[in-house]
Length: 287
Image 1 (tube, one colour):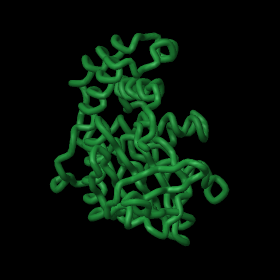
Image 2 (cartoon, helix red, strand yellow):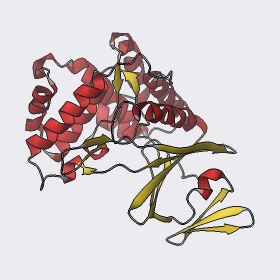
Image 3 (cartoon, rainbow, N blue to C red):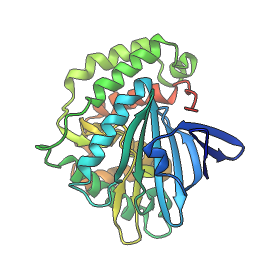
């Protein structure tokens, strides 16, 4: 629960105490119970608050992560005008050097958990059709946000310079040093076709499905205009981990592209980008 103590709001959660300065975003959470808290792969603090059957999510960023959170807020506002069951932005503000975004929950269970309700192929088809619609969205009114790929490469460069990549594990996984891998990415950058709206982390846990086959997408931190192979790369790995490699061709057939026409060099490009995040030394949570 949230309690007021000398102009601070104190969040009590499993013997840990988080202090946040008084703000409208925290007042919005009064009466809610903190039920889950974790640090995302990108270093964002994410907290889930419940009141009865209603849930809100608080996402916080600091420093170099702030532009991505600002971009996610702008994308969510735009998506809500074009897609049903998009998380709604309830509040966005900064409290000193910490930026906070609070959004509503959307219905559904993570796609990989719906195997008792649907066959694997049914789940994959729903994911493929949703992605096809996303990639073919009219972007004439899309807001100007950060170029997500530029930002990713800048963050990788910063991580290397500041020693935030586990060099031994990265080299073992890629047969390349981080510096050599970054150079390879920079050399391939011009070959990308950055003209479609992409999710950026299109994996099964970020695809929510209801029993009525309603699909919602969550976690838009890496969303923006990019190359469609960004999402192909993510969903290939997710399908392989959860359902098996043999289902990947079916995904592309349901999406509407012949599997052999997928550019494997671009898939490799985005897989390499992901290796930097897999082997990034975790940052400390915002407290």
